[in-house]
Image (cartoon, rainbow, N blue to C red; front, top):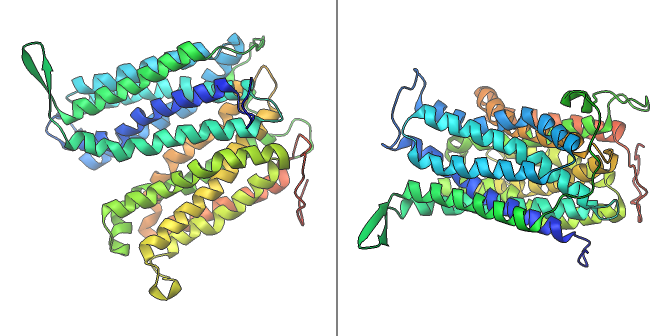
Length: 438
């Protein structure tokens, strides 16, 4: 049964579960740096600065889960089961989130973050594969867009609320004849654990595994990742090409993340404005992922991916030029121009990621959707981890350099989409394009 938008009810339930888990998990993006800077965490730093440790603790989630995704995706293909992998990952997320309340040293945080990275490797590719299994060619774009929208709502809400939860502590809770005092940090960690638990209950009660035949091959997980096109029609395998484009897009999004102090100084703004600018990308994604995904079911996937990668080039480059080129005669401040550039970059991202997942789903063999789609989710994760590292290195040559480099990567993505990616289903209402390469 599907609603009038063509979205499978189980996809909606799965999207709600990922939204719940994402709220708690994204809490940690704000809470962990505050926790590390507090007196609650002590111990040997091994000669490293607190700033470096904070960045490492935050980035280790992506560095751990991304390379593991092809293996967990392939394992779910071999067993023909997705649900148990999602439940196991959510259990790890809940346990690790609660355990932060017991942590007192830096290495405790590293171990728990690694555990969450492993959990992400079980959750991310299998939930995307579940969406793909539950969808059809006619509604795959709409289902992928809806799933990503809910997930991003959770990711966007978490950081907004996290600081307030910590600041409002300690909390006094009547318990029997006494009063229990809970710090703001513990409250945040308990909340993160509770959202993962809620997601567990939703998946356990509302999701069932679709009828997917287990894969019988004994090859390794990496056998499912083809770099070169096995048909000889193009140089690169189209799914691999989409993965590279997703990596380029994620790098372009993430180069902004580590430049907060520099951006605030150049634009003469406070951290609140930087947070709003950072969230602008997510805001655009929330508004547009579902309608764009649905539109690809009618007009085809490639056109949207192509338009999105083209739009990524100027919107990424503009972020590096905003401080030097004020527009509109000073009527619009540089800070709001940066917000606009980030929002338009989000529009571009919405035109790339969900349609790319849908196209990869169209290309994936029925018994290998987990390993096939993990190429894109893994690439995106690596891009999110690589972007901050690249910007921290390249900004030494000038503020605009990280953005110019990311824009160059996006331009390479345009070439890849034009030459290495083809539509695999006939659009019901094709969009005519001048110079469209098939």
